[in-house]
Image (cartoon, rainbow, N blue to C red; front, side, top):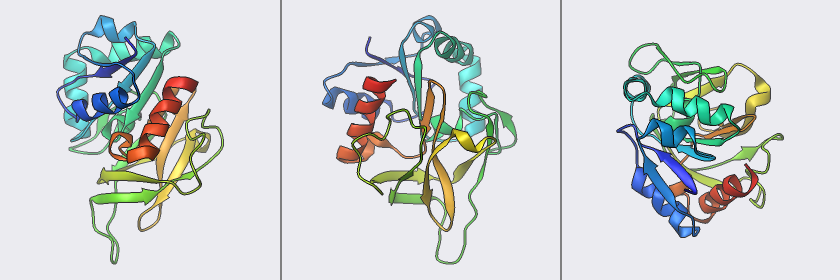
Length: 204
């Protein structure tokens, strides 16, 4: 299979699958731990609660499978909640341990004057070095589609490869070796999103 799209009972799986199809690639929605562990390209999407998502992942024994794929050199892309699940821990619906693939904590975004939570809509990405080619070919301040109420706080600043601004700067892209995550939805971000997914396939 070209890409294993992890099915843990939450997330817009078909939209992600359709985005890869638009690139001429086969994305297979998978809930079998052995198939995920053997995959060279894994995508972890997600919409919803951090705590509930991790509960589903552990119950289906997908956490160990994801780690096994990464340890074997497979590339992993986390999308939206999927990026947050890469963290060591998250606060949504009570403190919960994450996959701990990119050290950090996921905390609630705080509203400010003129700023409402959740953060919904297109916003510009400011990329940093160390992205391994994930943002190659994208213009500066390219727009991507966001929908979230929580944000990733990285323990190591070198894992941050992209930020955005919504009432203040927040982390919107992370990387640790062969693991990358984006807070936005590339599958809903038109040509910019498709370019990012193409880069993931070609460079990781």
